[in-house]
Every structure is written in structure tokens, then in C-alpha cells.
Amino acid sequence: MSDEAGSGGGLPPELEAAKRRVLKDAFGFDAFRPGQERVVDSLLAGRDVLAVMPTGAGKSLCYQVPALVTGGLTLVVSPLIALMDDQVAGLRLDGVVAEAIHSGKSRDENVAAWRRVASGEARLLYLAPERLMTERMLGALSRLPVSLLAIDEAHCVSQWGHSFRAEYLLLGNARQALPSARLVALTATADQATRDDIVEKLFGGRAEVFVAGFDRPNISIAVAEKRDGSAMIERYVANRKGQSGIVYRISRKKVEETAARLKAAGHNAFGYHAGMDAAARSAAQETFLAEQGVVMVATVAFGMGIDKSDVRYVVHGDAPGSLESYYQEIGRAGRDGAAAEALMLYGLEDIRTRRRFIDEQDSAPERKRVEARRLDALVGFCETTQCRRQALLSYFGETSAPCGNCDVCLDPPEVVDGTAEARLLLSLVAATGQRFGAAHIVALAVGHTSETVEARGHDKLPGFGKGADRPTAEWRAILRQLVAVGALEVETGPYGGLSLTPKGERVLDDGERLSIAKPRPKARERRRMVAEALPDEVDGALLARLKALRREIAVARAVPAYVVFADRTLVEMAATRPRTADDLARVKGVGAAKLQSFGDAFLKALNEG
Image 1 (cartoon, rainbow, N blue to C red):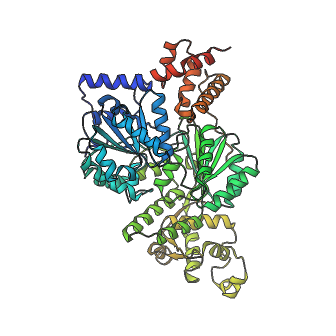
Image 2 (tube, one colour; image 1 turned 90 degrees about the vertical axis):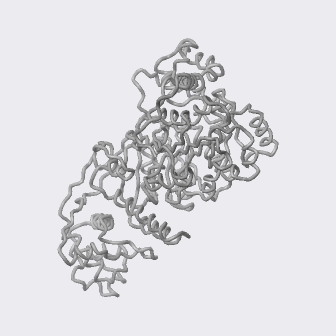
Image 3 (spheres, rainbow, N blue to C red; image 1 turned 120 degrees about the vertical axis):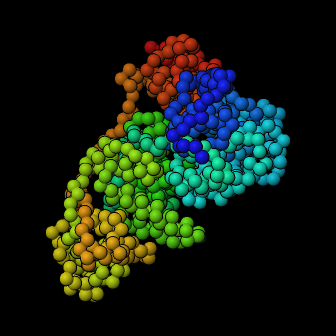
């Protein structure tokens, strides 16, 4: 396995020239984005590669360029029909013959696509993993000159990853049927354990591994205590009205309730979850991709492969299951490079629910232990008193300086000795038998009575009311920190009972000191409207005309708008105002095929007024 910072390099002059020519003529770029070229060079040199690149870094180009340089047929494995069709549509607009064969097409359409593949007309073929791994398909492909096998969303192959799919496990056998094909696996999210697992399962333990970095510095990260999550989401979205966003909820019921509330408040909001009719899901997704200012409220069923550049915020209305899931989901914001936001709402109830999910899943004990450790890492991230971006990147093995663009950096907490407060809460947990939840323990700390408190004699406990000088919100915050530092555990039963860990017992009985972030009064949400960071020389009205033209073309061709031109291409057009076809060809993202198809229309729009 190569050093992750390495590069392929050293291509023969003819391959180097062909690579540059394809990049410019087919895709309209003069240079690769960071991380792309070393993957391309390794594949052109005949080496197998696992590439881990952040969302929006251009993973598709890493196999599309080699596919066109070396000839033969490139197979692309993708888990989603919509993603396959979008990729094929984009390649065709670039003048590349590509096909997809999947269950969403009629038999006649699939047969016609296969004929173009078998005749050598098509250069790339997109397939779902279960279709590729049929005996009939592998037998047919083994008779064709397959030069490259590209596996997208490769984290799906790993049982340690956040989105394991059993059908991906079969892909390791594809090399036996296609021995001459190089193999590239690509993903945006994989920690070290997941990367090692992918290399073992897909490559038999031998591959070059390139990690392009996980940082997305344009995304501002924040975590807030969840108190009436639906109302908090509604306020947050209202402060960003007219901007595209994604709101993740943990259940289908919460998706439907939140989407309904946002619609009632006047937002162009849609729900999306696996229990919906397929046509309704597809319509919601198409509207989200095509229009501005749409809010998608969804479970994690939504998002993989979504390529919408102007998502300005991602809200987690409930804590995700791991930092891998969190990173993957916030990565759907700000793909255009402009400022974007990620807000997570979380509380102990979320942690209890997530632990229950782990306990109830049908998996091996080791798998459950790994998931529990990952959940612990998420809780630590939520309660950190250090830069959140540092904490997130550290989880993936990267180091960084404080980012200045997270809530902890922008409003640092004061860290104080919290031993006395911790001991009060721990003593109450112990005195009540280690089976009551956070709400009951906090009520005892502040001296609130109830039928349950009085019936059990908890109002007679020595610690009852000793924390009355602090509001309940501060005690909840301290309890969460005790869970985060491993002094308390949240049980998965119906009441989320708290119990002491060995660390908690040391703090309570042996005087071990404990530092906490000083609870502070409830802060009002920062009403930072995230504007698209356009260069000063860009005329907003001209950019709007270009986007309107792009939308017309996309509708006419029944493709998503971004496959016509990416937002950054339109921004560059509006900034440089090309007057001739030669000028337009120099804009990044304008390849020869798109120049021929759309050049006149866009030049007309650019030269109006």
C-alpha cells in the first residue's frame, strides 16, 4: 500500500499529452483539482487505487479521464439509479458515449444500451452491484475489452462503514471475471478502519491509497442543545428563507411532521424517506435539484450521490449515528465553495435512541462494539471545548489549526473546575439506584417536586435542591458533559436511565477532579444569513439570466441543471463576460461538445445589454 500523500507521476510523454487533451477537450478544464491527478496518473500507470476525496472534489473525473485516454470499456458501479442516469446525461453532454443498464429502464432500452456497449460505441457502462455480479453479466463482460472497473461509494463494501450494503461484498469477486481491468474504488468518507477493510475486501490487501483530505473549510459547524427540535428547525429555516437546505430527521414520522410545519410556514419544503411512493420521492428529488430555495426534509435515505452545488445549510434535527455519517451528510452543503452552514441539534434522548438502535440491530458483538465506540466519538465531538473542526478532522487522522469557523472558535466556552457540580449529579444518580433518566436527576438537583419524586422519597435525599441556584438548562448541559467524558452512561431502556461508570465512581468517591465547559445563559441563534460569495466583478442580474438559460436547456433535455454547466462555470462566465466562442472555450467546464451544443445560446445571453 502506498504512502497516502504519494502520487502516481512519471507518465510517458504520450500518455501525459493524451491526459491533458482529454481533460480540456472533453471536460473543459485546463488543470486538475487537488487530489485528482495523482489518482488519474496511478490508474494510467496500471496500478489499483482507493481514493478518499471530500464531497465536491471531483471523484468522477478520476476514472472518466483514464476511461477516455486508454480506450476499452470502463465499468462504473453505483448504488443509485438516479445517480447513474445523471452521470450518463452529463457525459453525453460532454460528447462521451456512456450507457446505464438498470431496473428503472424498460427491457428494450436496456437491450439497446447493451448493443452499444458490445459494439464498442460506448466508453463507459454504469451498473448496480447486484446486476454486475450476475453470472450472465460477468460472462458477457468477460468477452469485452474491459480496461477499468470503478466502484463509487466504496464505503458501502465495509461493515465498519456508515452505509454498509451487503450486495457490495460480492464486488471483490469481479476481479476474477475481469482480470485485465484495473480497479479504482472511490468514497468521500472512510476512517482508517473502513479504508483497511475496503482494501482487504476489494483489492485483496494490495492497493495504492490516496486520501485527499477531509476539510471543508467553507462550512461553518455548530452544535446546539435540542429543546423542541421542530420549533428550533422552523426558526432556523425562517432565518434563511429562499436558500436551499437539507434537514435530516431520525424517523419517517419526524420527516413528515417537520416538512408539514415548514410548508405551513410558507417554505418550499418536501419530505423524503424510504417509505414514500417511489414516484413521489423522485419528484421531490428532481424539484430539489432543479429549483432554488427548496428545503428537503429527509431521513438518511436521501443524499448519496446528490450533486446540487448551492445547498447553503444542512441541519441535523437529531444526532446522527456516527461522525462518518455526519461528515458525509454535511458535505452536501457548499459544494460550490461558497459559505455554508451545518447545525446539529442534540440531547441525551438522541444518544439513548442511538444506543438502542445499536443494541437492537442484528449484527455480531464486535460490530456493536465498534458502533458504540463511534457513537462515543460523536458525543465527544458534540461536547468538545476545543475547535470542532479539529475534533472532526482528528477523527479521520488529520491535524489542523483552530478553524475560526465553528461555534467553539467563534464563541469559546470557559473551562472551569466542575468537580463539585459533577459530584452532586453523580451522587443523585447513585442514590436513586442508577435507573432514572436525565429529567428526573435534574429535577432533584434543582429541587422540583412531583408525585414520582415524593412517592419514592427522593425529596428527602441529601442532594435534593442543592443545585437550585442554577437553571435546569445548565444542569442538563453538565449531565451531557458527564456522559461525553465517560463518567455516566445512558441506558437504552424506555426511560434512558443513567448509571455510573468506573470514572464516575472515581470522581464521586475518590475525589478525581473534572473540568467542564462553564454553562452559559441560552444564547440567541446567530442569524447569519449565508450569502453566495460572488466575486465583486460578477453582475448578479447577468448570473441570474445565465442560470435561467441553463434551466431552460436542462428542462428541454430532461437532465438536472448542473450537468449542463456547474454553478462555478456560470459564475466565471458572468465574471469574464466572454464575447466569442474562443473566449467561451477558455472558461473552466466548457468542453468542445458543450461549446458546440450551447455556445451560441450562452454567448447571446452574455452579450445582451
